[in-house]
Amino acid sequence: MTAAQTELARLRALSARLGEDVTRTQGAGGNTSLKADGTMWIKASGTWLAEAERCDIMVPVDVEPLREAFRDGDPRAEKATDFVLTDRNPSGLRPSIETSVHAVIDHPVVLHIHCVETIALAVRTDAREEVARRLSGIEGVDWAHVPYRRPGVPLGKAIVDAQTPGTNVHILANHGLVVSGTDVGEAEARLERVVAALRQPTSFPAPEGVGGLDALAAGSPYRPASDPIIHSLAASPWRVEIASGGPMYPDHVIFLGSQTGVLSEGRSLSDFGSSTEPPKIVVAPGRGVFLHESVDRGGELMARCLAEVAARLPEGAPLRRLTGEEVHALTNWEAEKYRQTLGRQASNG
Ligand SMILES: [Zn+2]
Image (tube, rainbow, N blue to C red; front, side):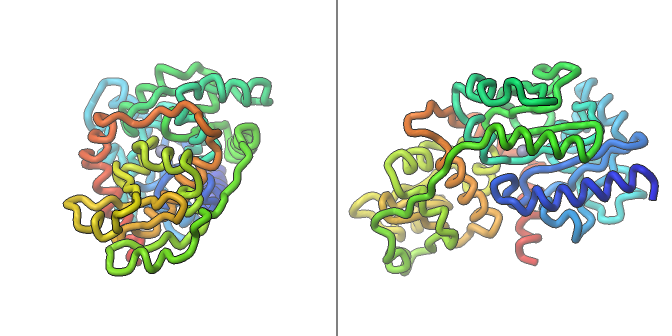
């Protein structure tokens, strides 16, 4: 094996570990890359990091021409499909929709995860101060705060503007975490230090009125969430407010939509089901959480992500929601539709 092949094998093993931890990656979210000998190996769009050792999920991209296209404002940088080294890509998969994020960071290894410890800080209006308090003085960490932009080229540009040559940790507002390094071992060790420093206390109380959820859902296109942690979203007015006040990060919009239903007294789940655009997730305060029949495993993992984030937000924390315009930009994006289609195929076997 060449040195590059050994590193790629290490990256795949690390990717699988990151993908199997729901507090770090949910479904098709998150992506990793390795730049070696002029090639950037990047996770394929729509694939799951958790599958990194079982399937061929890494796509080879000719990185210098891609970086040049990005710098020149060439629209081909968005999908990056024109830069795939097709003769070395037998799977025919597309590179991740977040390929620009990896291309604009110079380090050979880049890890991007939707870590709930990071998201719970990155959705706050005071994220910069909250992160600074936790990351200052952490060994080997040179971090930058990146304002929210749609994943893809706009986010790549925001990273270029925010970083300095030494930056090796990027906190992406309303999105997640990027950690980079000269090799897989260094990047992983740094990621562990960052996640440990950002860790917050959690609790997942069961709603007091738990039970009878199947009866509430009977005859409607909804089912109670199967993961008990998700029901903690219904356990307090604050958590209900977090869940129902509008999406806070991109993958929530993609997999669970922009509306969360709240089942108030006197309403039934069938009322939601018969609306023209039924919400994918409905919270019944004090009772539990219901998911629409169209929600697959990836969607249920996003509901878990929201419960994990809510558990880490102290009551009254100042939240920044995605704006209507930002939500619209995510739902009308061709590259994202491709990822969802592929995600559905994957979850259907
Ligand atoms: Zn992301």
